[in-house]
Amino acid sequence: MRRTIPLFITTAAGVVLVVAYFVPWMSALGETVSTWFNILAAIAFILGGGNLMKMNLRKISDRVPGWGYSVVTLVAFVVTLAVGLAKVGVNPLPEYPSYAWSGEFNEQGSAFWWIYEYTWKPLTATMFAMLAFYVASAAFRAFRAKNIEATLLLGTAFLILLGRTYAGVWLTSWLPEDSPLRIELLSEFVMETFTTTGTRAIMIGVALGVVATSLRILLGVDRSHLGSGRN
Amino acid sequence: MLRFLQTLDRRWIFLLMLLAVGVPIVLQLRFPESITPNTLAAFAEIEKLEPGSRVLLSFDFDPASAGEIAPMATSFTYHAAKRGARLYFMALLPVGPQMAEDTIAKVIARDFPEMRYGVDFVNLGYKSGLEAVIKVIATDLRQMFTTDARGAGIESIPMMAGVRSVQDMDLVVSVSAGYPGVKEWVQYAKTPFPDRISMIAGVTGVQAPPLLPYVPVQLPGLVAAIKGAAEYEALLADAYGLQAEPRYQEGRRRMGSQLVGHVLMILLIITGNVVYFLTRRQERQREARR
Image (cartoon, rainbow over all chains, first blue to last red; front, side, top):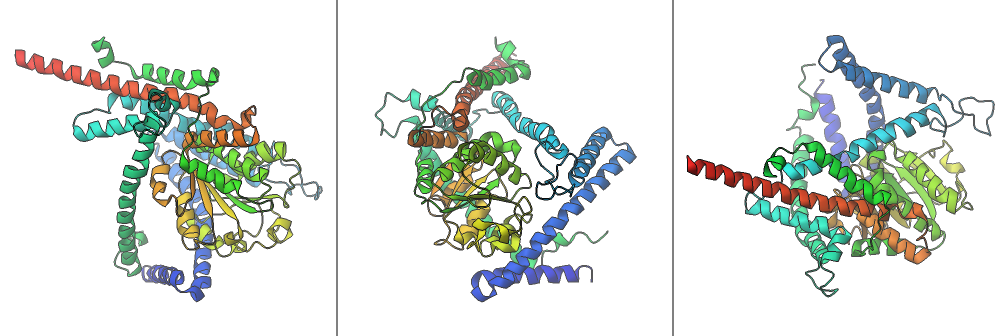
């Protein structure tokens, strides 16, 4: 029963969504199923929070290597959640001055806003920006023209790297403006012809794979999404 | 020299990259932009908006990608506001509404003080559900958005009158850095209603190639990466005289770093290959001597 009911829900919801796409009068039912999904997705945030607590508390309790990071994660999670829910430092809205919690949780100057603006925002931006350093290091150590395929790949990379900046324009500025050999035009050609063709082929292949996998799930052949059933 | 390069500490490479991206910003290096057709097409789509048009701006990015995406979000917002459009901000990522608020503060509050919240622009906020949100609002916006990001009921917002779904928008602008984003907008909004929904997009560099097959049928205009943002800023500057306003030149400012960074990357790849082949030759000679 623990597997049959979820399987039935999966099949029913999937069939409704597929049929609703082609049968206009069933579109309202399709929307209802989509709305259920959105509600479930919102509830998943609570489950995600609970799971985060459980996993990190276990790591701390077992003193696994790196358990200190779990402490940092949990403290950050609990503090952010608490200041957001309690609306610490939030002023009441002018239209409801007697209701202390009537203001927005992320109001400018509030504790939550402060955490977002001065902790989370610079940290995530820094993480992303650090990619440039690692890519530069990898460029020196890993990108080797070992064979024809790798050489073609490197040549294309040079073309795109130059074509996406003024360097490409400058290097071939001596050529006529409409010359197809100008680097910026060559780079556009590569993107529009080779990249688009390759991407389209991959997309069609992926789409066929998704259809096959979806049918297997809807027909109950593939039950991996229901878990192992051991818990 | 070869020995030095063979055992080069990667911190030297990090230092070179720091200088490559930092020096052009300090020196404020600017270069002319050659405009690509995709950016020009995106610009033309906003340019043809009539005053009072409805534009839905989906801000599906976060601070991690804001360095690349925020300049184009700023430009789209300025351009649409300048055309007299009514702006509906929303997000498919939890921090998206904050990105919208940042842009509202940077653009609307400073350059369009006459625009009133709820009348000329609104922040509808974030809804969970990823692409399912798009699927629902494509036919019934109010089923998902019962309030705006500030908690006001949708019915009490004047500019929501007459808006039943995304199909009532004159243009959808998806500014995204991944999933869910432009691809999902194309699949769940544009494709089922090809004649009733018009859309353009602004995306990160890595996201652009997988979206190129959608150009120009589903996506008439696509602004890709900081290069696309710089091109859009150049078009905007020419059309509305914004050359002197640093807020609308962020993309162009970053193109200086991109140029030097890209050249450094090419030099590093070439140097790395020279070291590799010289080392291999040395090894072969050593083996031959044995």
